Image 1 (cartoon, one colour):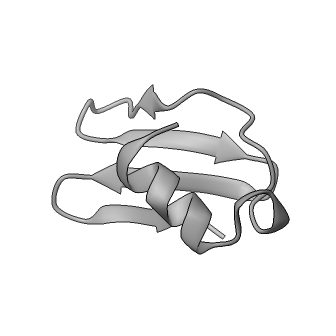
Image 2 (spheres, rainbow, N blue to C red):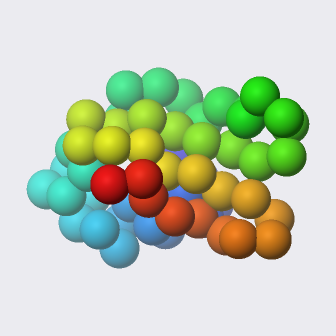
Length: 55
């Protein structure tokens, strides 16, 4: 985990917030961004939108 997704995970409380990562950081199907799944939800990153959570 690194970059904007890491920063957002830290912002939301690390393990105490979203829990531990369940996947590595992966490329979205349209190849326009990145995402990572955590115990408490997923976080996505796009160049235009930055990092955000889905929960």
